[in-house]
Image 1 (cartoon, one colour):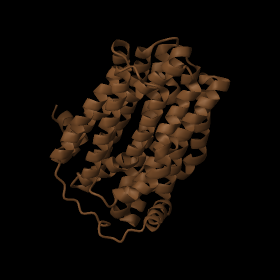
Image 2 (tube, helix red, strand yellow):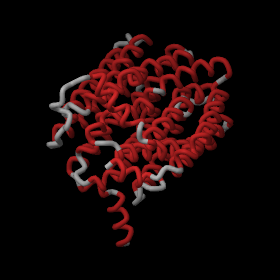
Image 3 (cartoon, helix red, strand yellow):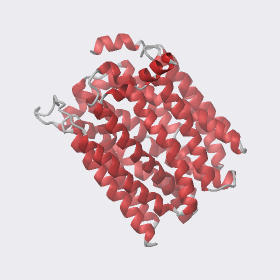
Image 4 (cartoon, helix red, strand yellow):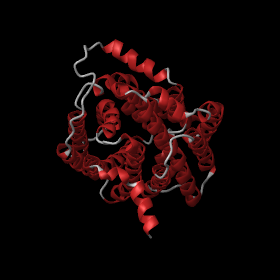
Amino acid sequence: MSNNKTNLQFILRAFRYRNYSLFFGGQSVSLVGTWMQQIAMGWLVYRLTGSVFILGMVGFLSQIPVFFFAPFAGIFVDRWDRRKLLIITQILSTIQAAVLFILVLLNMIAVWHVIVLGIFLGLINVFDMPGRQVFVVDIIEKKEDLVNAIAINSAMVNIARLLGPSLAGLVLAWKGEGFCFLLNALSYLAVIISLFMIKTDSYLENKNKKFKLWDEFKEGFIHAFELPVVRSMILLLALTSLMGMAYQTLMPVFVKDILKSDARTLGFLMAGSGIGALAGTFYLASRKKVDGLGKIIVFASGIFGMSLIFFSLSRNFWFCFFFMMCSGFGMMVQMAGSNTILQMVVHDDKRGRVMSLFITALVGIMPFGSLLSGWMANRIGTPNTILISGIGLFFGIFALGRRISGISFLNQLTEVK
């Protein structure tokens, strides 16, 4: 019993820090609402249009701002007070969700409203996503606990992935999309309150440095790509975003047209992905060493690709649920593992810029996958599109795997630090 308690304390050691506990609590509530809104928006667009292509186009337009602007947003993340930055982004996100709710409540909602508000949220995320990634480093006092904090942070995201889609499916069937948007707007209050309660006195090395946008962008880009570990992780994430993440856009179509089911099934399948992802993050949180993580990332990426292949061939709910769990595990071990490595090897004064490139690869490339998958699904069908994505991802990882799995991260940590 004592050993189990000791192991649990080791896995949850990041909660020793008051600021981290506050941030975790607020974000946990907020991210559940975010996932509810994401599922509801996809369901709303497909209900209004019945078009797979428009569904893909909405996903493309809501995420494309990250691709164009996130690399430059990292410059400001390295200069501005990150706590104040996050407070602003959360307030703006609250307004976006509230407007969606009002439009649905008044029965005035149209696809163009969803597109405009999706682009607005995308512009907010340009600053919010890298800001949140780097803020975790600011509120962890002992850097040896950083790996654990990042893994638990990923667990928080996946608890939301587990609860949010499930609740969205129930709320969609009970009250419709508008109530999902209202709950998301209210959920932002939790993270706003937690951010006001957090006290940080982190010093920004770039704060008083003369501002030159292009020079600072190049400095961060060169720093990222001159390090083999950073370069390899970003390329792998970009491939995963292009080939592997598009299935999320097509899930409403797969559930409705292939499985002949409703929003509840959509919620349960997305929750299956969340369960697998949650298992992956707890696995990473229990690790004591960083070295060897490269091989694990490659293996997990292969699991992700194979799971998509088998999912596309399945017509039974339980088989689909199982492969969603496997895909969630593989996807999250790859992404959280990559996040951990990048946060540990980059210089403190360039962390915002490097993590912005991480966000660009992870989220900014995704719209192109969404647009491509929507176009392909219209021509060859949703299952074949997911099948081709899984095959492309699997063989792409096979080609990159030897480079990534052979990297010695401990050596690079020594070189950089």
